[in-house]
Image (cartoon, rainbow, N blue to C red; front, top):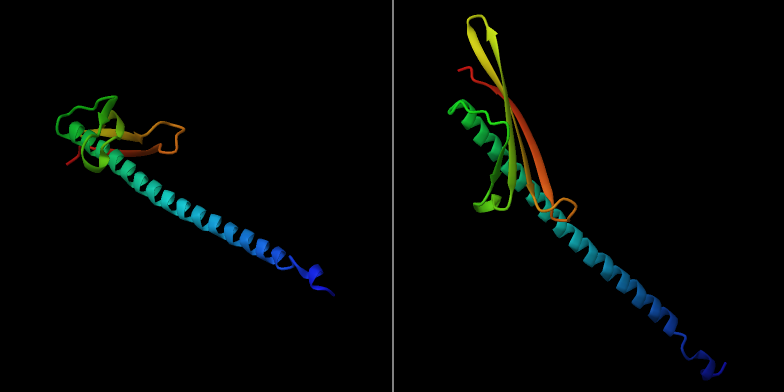
Length: 135
């Protein structure tokens, strides 16, 4: 065999190696992006849960201390880690007589949202609780 027929033989393995290494690089970058997005969404979920629970606490205080159970209230969170969340709080009550005591049962629901529905940054949490005014 002459030297002329053997030229370019190492080109095929070199191209294969370049394609494989480029593919591995793309996969590594993609995994990094997915990992960071997961962390951000987990944090946003925790913040949404805290906002909803804040709405519940506000409504419970309003119902038990101020004797006010508003059917619907919108709270706009502006401070600290809850800034940017909107919480829709609803409260309903029913009174029952047990012996000589009248007991009021409150059902409070809070729905916290941030971002626009359908967008990647949208997050929401709904929390519901039931309580009575029995001491």
